[in-house]
Figure 1 (spheres, rainbow, N blue to C red):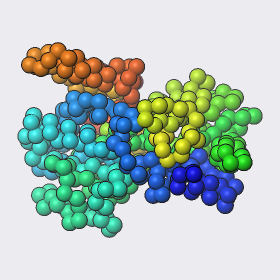
Figure 2 (cartoon, helix red, strand yellow):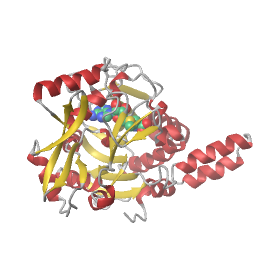
Figure 3 (cartoon, helix red, strand yellow):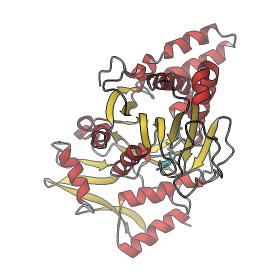
Figure 4 (spheres, rainbow, N blue to C red):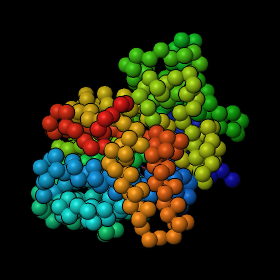
Length: 389
Ligand SMILES: C[S@@+](CC[C@H](N)C(=O)[O-])C[C@H]1O[C@@H](n2cnc3c(N)ncnc32)[C@H](O)[C@@H]1O
């Protein structure tokens, strides 16, 4: 018996003949009939690990970066951190805990909102609200009572928030935005659609459903190799527009799998930049068990930077996660671990987890982008010093 998500996809294909891959991915991940991120049957880490679920040191180091941002902004009495796609809010909790321990000034100012589609969380108010600031009551009506110090809000993107002064943060969010897939064939762009062949989901190539796919690729000035298959993330356009609307002043930190366009759209990456994953098993073909597995696609960071610049966001820095965490002092945590009075086995487990955050074979090659709005040009952020990328 096909799952509700699969039935929804099949029904749409029967009705329209075929659907874009972006529509397919959107249903698989977010359909209220049982999309992967909508069902929330399991914790995310039962399917795959992420940096925050690997070790709380990740959040502790980001807290250091946030503290510097707060200082650069003149230590305002209210500092918002809006984390979108916060998943099980593991990162939120480690940032808030560290801030309370190590940065009492920031802890006082910190207003941390974790936003996600989590069905169990309180729905954000429908009407756009004005943020209570600078010292208004920090308990907008109708919001969920949060885990300590973090407001958990169910919502899409940044729609529930306004007037942000602080930092908009995401870890592995944009790689989950639905993407359009294409093939470069006969010297032109063809779009990959999802259809049915008999009872099987299958791909079919046709004219692109929107000129925006070709426009994006043309704007990148790439010379695509014949036969290349890849993706274009159009949803990031709306995302950047949302940021530009809600961020009054401050920073954006985006952490995700990906590369600059010229490193991403290469022959060697053809057909390799999107995959599905469930219960820690990775598959390059995303049509098995729709709704039961995650689908993720590498992010083109140059498009993110350019879109930001078009919307008045300055690009502050772009580095690999290993450099970012090195700059923020990951070695101090490794040194501290050595002096802790815990068993050798526990030390070793912690050491392995912390090291994996900077290991290029593991999380170390993930990219970190910083953008800003309303800050001095060339503002220097600790995490990005000595950047090479
Ligand atoms: C790969 S998980 C990452 C979770 C968490 N940030 C972590 O690193 O462990 C991606 C999360 O983004 C959420 N998400 C994706 N698109 C979203 C959107 N437009 N608005 C809010 N949440 C979104 C998903 O529901 C999911 O929880």
